Image 1 (cartoon, rainbow, N blue to C red):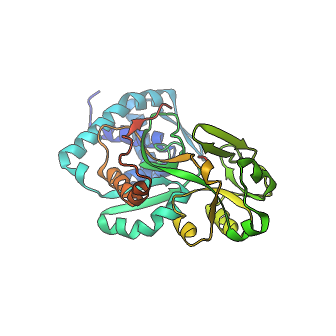
Image 2: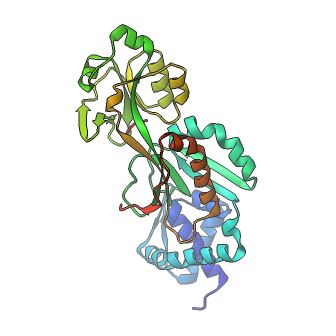
Image 3: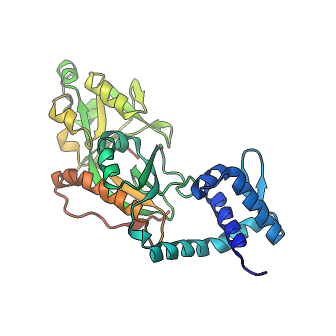
Length: 322
């Protein structure tokens, strides 16, 4: 069987379907119509004489033969793509569509106000920021990278730490005037607390206090449970109770006196922010540019923490507060 362009094109379409999980998403990534993707798969099946996908009205699943073809051809397709990028010089051009799985808190409180600057800097870049509660499968979901709080997930993603942010225990001054100021971590059980929903466990995030190497964990009990950062901050500043928050992005509330830190000697906990992306030898310029822009935004926060260097990217082996 001689190799021809149609065969290579068909295998490329098959890889896109396998990685995105649907004809629609594959079509979007390839610049085709869903019907064009379907026809390309049919031509491939006719060309090699076997069915590569089991199709239903809702999903497309690789057959055993299709999976073997995808697993064998996938690395070669990546190599061809990387070689073409390097040869064309596009590795240094920030352009095209960048899809980012973005943490809602980071997007709203830190990134949103700087987006006009990013788009002006890179006029050939199209940006899609999709807020998700979890990382998920970046490749299958069609994302170029993710920006998430918390330890990196197990898997093959490259994880680059952008920042360690403090976890603060705060309340509105008027709440503290009415109810008193907790002097020890154990005192918070006698106060109203605003709990934050953990989508992974479907329970509230635990309350933990750190001082040097000492840790105290307090059961997450309270009458108010929220899953939105704005609601948590708004209710806390209104005097609904005590909350545990990250200090990143709330500097204006602290400096204006809307929120007051309590139990300061028990605030040694740090929560990391990571950029996560698939492992490839040649990182796309648009991914590098977005990560560099995030680091530029976070530079004042890094300076305030006295941190001079960032951890280099690392391969993962496999969130707490908002």
